[in-house]
Amino acid sequence: MIRLKFGSVLGNMQSKYPIIYYLGWALWFLSAGLIMLWVFDDQIVTGINRWIKPLKFSISIAMFLWTVGWYLLNYEKTKLLRFIAWGVSISMLIEIVAIVLQAARGVGSHFNTNTVFDAIVFSAMGNAIAFNSVLLLILGFFIAFRKPLLNHEYQIAMVLGVFVILIGSYMGTQIIANMGHSVGVAEDAAGIPFLNWKLSGGDLRVAHFFGIHGLQLFPLLAFMMIGKIRLPFVNGILLVTTLVYSGIIFWLYIQASNGIPLI
Image (cartoon, rainbow, N blue to C red; front, side):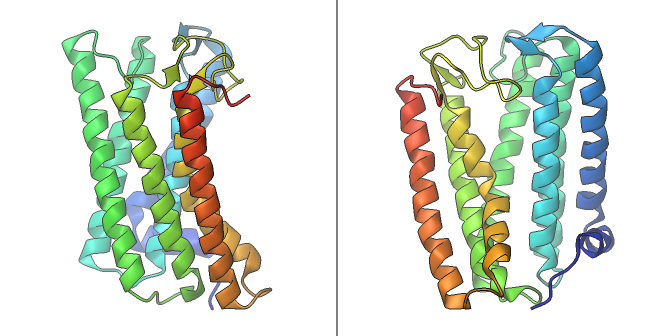
């Protein structure tokens, strides 16, 4: 097994998938700028400072892109993987540009169809995320049936990570179907600081959050066990964890659908 150090991972990413590398850095710098805007601008949109939502998405998307980049680096570069790298990057760029743009305008980005322009922006975001989900599905099948050149011990973890993030994407479709993330409470009601998960009603974002970050969780769990436990047991633990974790995600979704807050 070859474990690449963080610096060498970024170096390889810069060489093989520069679109993911540079967009990831751009998002980290954007996050720093959004923190400054949050501190000095007190305008409120849907109950929170207007820059908090772009900040959350900027951080999350940066993590997502570099995680996808690490997945791709485990395999020999192909036209398909290059297409996936460009596809997820463009999809995420559309998403973050739309969110920042709407925040700058002082309006909500998601579920905002108040004007034709707002509806176009919301539609573009939805189409970008749908395309991204299709690319992740393709990536999952590629990983499942192609032996990695590097870190082959992580193959099961990567497949499971993609599986769980697709569950998280499904939870996102339920938020869209509900035309909002809140259940039994107003969208601008009080929530947990920063995350803004509602305190007095259900919030479908909780299940979505835990789903989409499964992409990082399962390789991290594998990293903690590989070298300490025999590989068959590692894979068994990962499979059991996936079942339990998926069950928790669906339980969080059912809880929120019934208007029950996380806390």
